[in-house]
Image (cartoon, rainbow, N blue to C red; front, top):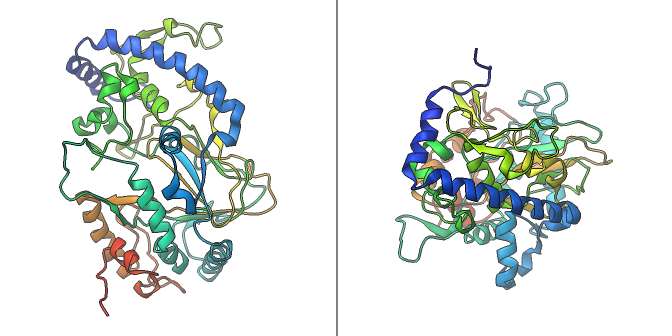
Length: 412
């Protein structure tokens, strides 16, 4: 009898298909698995010792003056705090406007339902303004340019210096509250990381055993994140596993190995006590939901070598005008407890470059904005057209913000 979260038998076929498509897959994957586990032990200790300081912190005004070493650190750790992107006064004004919007529109959908803190709202005036702020767009452009294509490859319709706006929600988390809505997870694709041939190509170096050469910033295959309060560790802030190379390498190979010992064995974490196995349909951390799948959801039980209990790292203390960005492949979560005295408030503003697929999405999103409806990527709800204080096109702050929203730029 299958477990409720069991995956269908065809996923065992998928594992065999992947194994057959890479020469000497078992040998190379087993060697890589041992190397990754050994490196995780070293890096996990460094992360745990450094704590929040392990996450790079950069001033907005210094973005164009960073050394190659500093940029490499941001890319490897897959997360960064960019300080003073907007003034604290401006960010605090946005937060107060968000709070007033929620009060003026009590029918707005939010979670938890009896104490709303995470709002399914996309088009409030402060959100529209923040997304179109020139400094936010400049920070997004800098982040987008961390990505690249091979020097001999040109991808039609891609411009990393033209940012686009992806509308998302906001959170005003109250102090003293527990939060179970965002446990450790990865946003950038579920089972398609393995199942979709184009997406799988992003991880081909890992699957071929050359995990150290994996480049999470190579756009090929992929052409297919701001705070508004003062929030410190233990105050309901973001937590990340700050090593995108190791996290990707481990998560991609994990489905091909199983433990031979019980979890309480002193040798449980040793690479040699895990054996290559492609007979099972399980992809640990990938779970069925609503006819599809979600995850990866790494857990200490399913992904013990990540040592998430000590490596999920709270971002350093952030102030109202700071932003926090993380790579789409980064394992991230929201702290379970908020032990501070003030709220932990966040507007989610991803960094999105111009690509053909992104442009098509922006055009669809533009229509939902103009109609006050939920954006295409999100569940359909009542929309915001009838709400008091909803944002309009006139609230966009700059011509670049209009371009980012797919709107025409007026010429004086």
